[in-house]
Length: 448
Ligand SMILES: [Zn+2]
Ligand SMILES: [Zn+2]
Image (tube, rainbow, N blue to C red):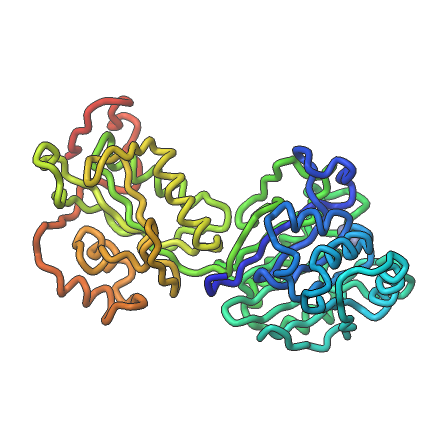
C-alpha cells in the first residue's frame, strides 16, 4: 500500500446490468469496493469475480463489510467462492454486517458446504468500532433490504491519512447519519448516484444527480465536504447513465478498476524547448488538470532558462519552464503514469538524454511520499540542484518542506548558484488572442 490509503472500485454497476454478460464491454460489476487493500465492502453477484479481475489476491483481504442484503451487494455463492479461494490455511475473514444479514448469510454458507474460515462481527448501527487502526461507524440508510426489518447501512471511516463516507445504496441521507458524520472534513465520499436524470422511480431508494448535488452542497456549507474532497458517483444504472459514464465536475464517475487515494498536494515541473513552447506548457497543464481526481491549485509564472548540460548543437534552444501544484487523489503510480501519458500525448519523442523535447512533465513531490525507483525519484533531486525547477516551485510554495531535505523550498533556492540563469518569460498562461496566434507549425516568434 506504500503508505497511501487507496480505494479500488472493483464493481460499480446497479442491478440493471446484465451480469450473465459480466466481462463484456459496458457491463459493470455489482458494487464492491476495496478499502486500503484490506477491507472489501460488499460481495454481490460479481463480487468475487471482480476482485480476481482487478488482480487482488483473495488472501489479501482481512475483512468483508456488507451494506445490505440485496443480491447485488451480498451474494452467498460469491462469498463462498471468495472464502474457498482463500483456503483453509488463511486467517479467518471477518464478516461485518447487521445481525439479520449475517444470520441469513450464515445459513446460506452452511447450506453451501465447507468453505474457508470466517468469523462474524455483527454491526450495531451508529456504534463506532475500531479495526485496523481505523474508527468506523455503520450509518443507517434510507433503503429497503430483502430482509423484513433490516437496517441498510453506509459506512463512515476515519483512518490515519484518510476519512471516507461510503454511501451506497440509499436515497438522501438520514438525520442520524448526518449527526454521526459530525463536522470533521472528509477526503472521499462515494455517493449512490444510480439515476443520472431526475424522474426515475428508483429515486425513492437511490439518488439522482440533483439529489447528490443538494447533499454535497449542504455538507460543503458545513465544512464536511471541502473543495478538495473527492466525490465519486457510484452504483450507476445501465439504463440511466451513459457508458462510459461522464460525471460533471467536481464529481468523478466510478468505473470498474478505478483506483483513488486520499488527496494530497503534488508539484509537477513542466519544460519545453521545441515547437510552440508556451502552447506545449499550456496543453500539458490542461491535460493534467482535466484528469479525474485531480485539481489544479497553483501555477507559477512561465520562466525562460538556458539549457543545462546539452550537446553543443542544442545549446541555443532555451527552455520554457513552469511548476504547477495539483491536489491529486490518484495513487502515486497512477499519477506518475498520467504524467508520462501527457508527455506522450504531446508527441514527446524520447530521442536522447538532454536532447530537445516538446514537453517534459516531471513529478517533483507528492505529499510525504519518498521513492527511489528507476523512473521515479521523490522528492525530485533537481529541486535542490536546478534553479529552473526550484525558482518556479519557490514562487508558488516557498514554505514547503520536502521529506529528506533540510529547510524550505525558498531556502533551497537561496542556496543555489545564480547560473545557469532563470528569467521570467514574456509568455503567459492565457492564450494569445486569435489574431496574434501564429498558424499551426509556424516558427515561434517572440510577441512584443
Ligand atoms: Zn444496489
Ligand atoms: Zn440495494
